[in-house]
Amino acid sequence: MNRITLSNLEPVPGSRKRPIRLGMGEGSGTGQTATRGQKGQRSRSGDGKQVGFEGGQTPLLRRIPKRGFTNGPFKVVYQIVDLACIDRVFKNKAEVTVEDLRIHRLIKGTRLVKVLGDGELKRALKVSAHAFSRSAKDKIEKVGGKAEVVKA
Image (cartoon, rainbow, N blue to C red; front, side, top):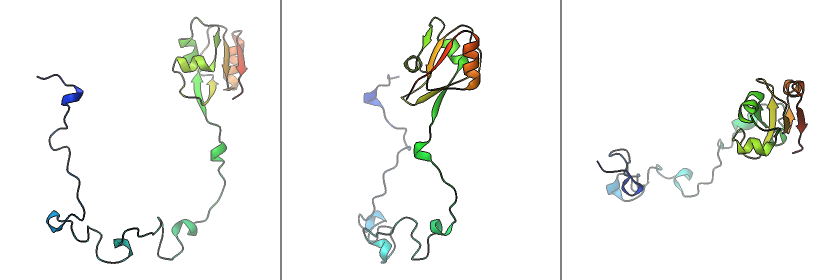
């Protein structure tokens, strides 16, 4: 059996179909009107109707009552890290920063980090993060560590 390499990869037979060629003559089966029907606005190129247009009738989206407010663009979303994970990964460190969490892949990217109090901490650590839950802060300080809030 041949070894599989990038140069000899092929799709499984029958898994790839040829694209339908619209408007390519009568012999293609989709010639002349190219599956758009006959005449009318929708059969023309650049027919120009917007999504949700209902022929002049007030669109559904405008008929439904709107309520409430969402502050989505300004919502603060934290990546969470548990004390159990910190205790497991940082066995021989005295200080844990946001960058250390990123290096050890406990967090991704540059979003804000919040430490939660799930699990136990067995030794004193200085933990730096953007936010702490009350239980996490209590557990860190109970074993003699320090919870330091970092500004974003």
